[in-house]
Amino acid sequence: MLRFCIVFILMLFLHSIALTQFNARKSKELDLSLFKNKDYQFSVLVYDVEANSYLHYNDSLINIDYTPASTFKIANTIIALENGVVDSANFLMKWDGIKRENVNWNADQTLNEAFRNSTVWYFQELAKKVGSDKMQAGLELLNYGNKAIGGEIDQFWLNGTLKTSMHDQVRFLSNLITRKYKLAPNTYDCLFQVMKYNLSYQYVVYCKSGWGQQESEDIGWLVGMLIKNGKQYAFATLITTNDYKKFDMQSLRYKISKAVFDGLK
Image (cartoon, rainbow, N blue to C red):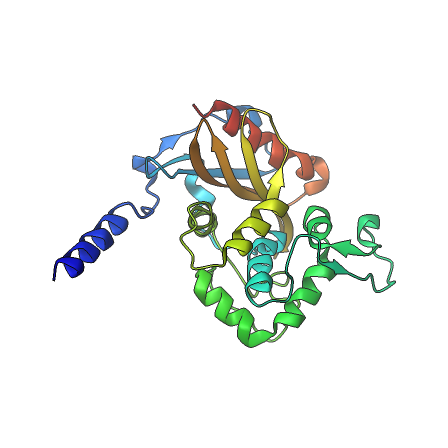
């Protein structure tokens, strides 16, 4: 009986510290007016794990579902590791010899290189090796976005079948940084190894960018986890535009995010 009571109390405690729903009125608004521009919209959402609270800029995009594009490589990596398709960051896959527009993709790739290069064909092959049933089970375990695969195992995160919101991304990432999912220790260790990004010596960032199309809009993501002054954060930065050629989408995602990180105490 005593053991049951202890477990019950522990469950209540864990539930009490679970990630709260985003509410703009209860969230501190960030000052990112420096980056405002008529050529695009952007939003930022940051979750402070210890304080169980949010910071945000422009809440208008935060709960809208978008294609995850290459940010899905985080979940794809987890599912491949959990199913034994890959076993380490050094897992090598041979290039198929097809020349693609991104020259960094035209070579043999390790998981670490493919993650950093955002090599589409590598992760398409991982998805094929995982298969539809195990991929669906992985999405259910992670409660990832709308959990929709559709009929194309190597296209669903690119063609708009799978969708997720900024808030969903932050929930997913906060569960990763606190290791709440029942994943093998090696899965977490390998994932954090490939996600680590050297943005500043003042903090540690684990992240993934993504760029996709949704109807007439281009969608630019940067999502990840941050450790600064011993505090843990999950974050999502999103940019939407109807004309990406008017600015540098690639670097803007990092500039906006870095401005936020630098300002965290």
